[in-house]
Image 1 (spheres, protein in one colour):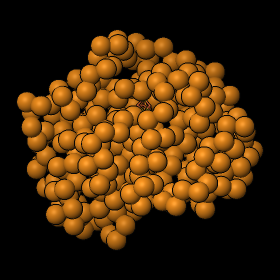
Image 2 (spheres, rainbow, N blue to C red):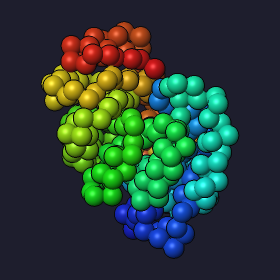
Image 3 (tube, helix red, strand yellow):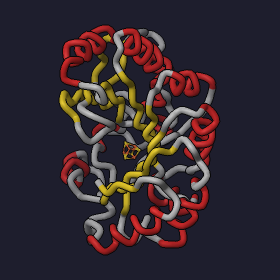
Image 4 (cartoon, protein in one colour):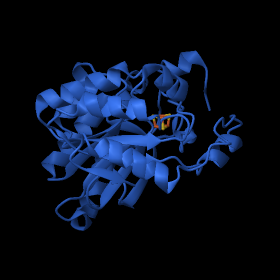
Length: 262
Ligand code: SF4
């Protein structure tokens, strides 16, 4: 596990330069139903620059961890699973943070499209450059994780700024391609009414946002933090109450056509 600055700033796309056509992954889930429409093969890629205090998969953060897997092997696995995807399903790439491996993921999504397989990218929107835009071009649905509207709170929660996340949303809106927003509701951290209203105001005119998902905070990843020797700072924070979830959903319903509590 790494937490020092030098590794945080490294980019898996660069690390993998020599290992062309290989994706650094953490794991693959075969029949995922929580990460995008329908039944999906979910690829959890390795490496993330955020340090969300509630991260349920802290073992995906290290950009040098995980294992390398050949692109074509992944494609063939998806092709074998294709009969189970139905009309809505396909492949989701989640993490970790997929944008760190944008170059290779663009190749993967291109190949999946050749095979007639739908692509979803679950991203925190950490960066937007030419290669990220090219990947988004091959992404049928973007699930953008907005961790907080307020930048100070965002930094407290994730260690980094939210500026690029909003730039990614703006770029996606400009392309006219669909996206969902995802918002982890953490009591005392991301449930302030004022900031939820601001979030709604910011996105209310976006036409490409099909829905916003509220993900209730949970502590299921806490034991992983402990086993990695990392301090879990939200020990005393409990799952949001039903009232708090309903209050949040009511605020967001004023601005988004669909609000889903997961
Ligand atoms: S963005 Fe996702 S993978 Fe990265 S630290 Fe946050 S929750 Fe974990």
